[in-house]
Length: 206
Image (cartoon, rainbow, N blue to C red; front, side, top):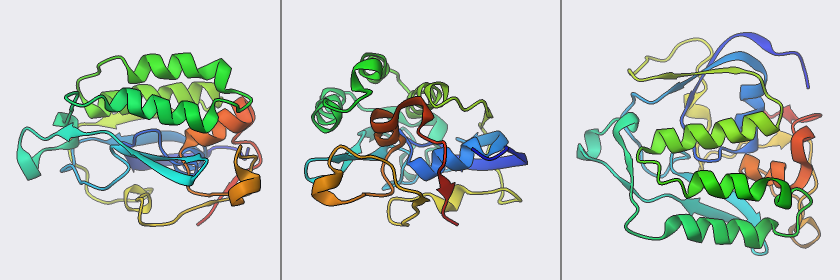
């Protein structure tokens, strides 16, 4: 990978975020993840996309917003009234059970997802730490509890499920022969297929 850039990158919290999000994070010495903004639905905050037998498959965490539409992300709660965690793990097992690195990392991943973490941002933070440690990313990650106005290094608006961003440089995918390369997937896809060296050689689409 390229040498990390000086300065600070600002991002939203994300559930098992896409590869390009992880790549951008890895290219900076410091990243601030804001959790003070008003929670937005249909975003990566509670959603990721894996690649399975049928192609790109979205996985969403049901949430509770104690203050309704004005709830900041730091106060959003995970809704455990449905068995979403086991559904997600079943989908991950179906998609990556035969991938080279599944056996090495699935148990740790499952332990985090099944931990019963109350707040969404804390669950996201634990999963992000899991990905970064294995992918050998040593960027300093800080969490901002108060809303921050847009400023230099702000990439918050860049990552959204409806805004296609892809990484230049394809990597092996388990169902690649069936679908061709599927970009914009969760970093979990990269980890399960390529392992700790997955980010090496990728360049971010701008």
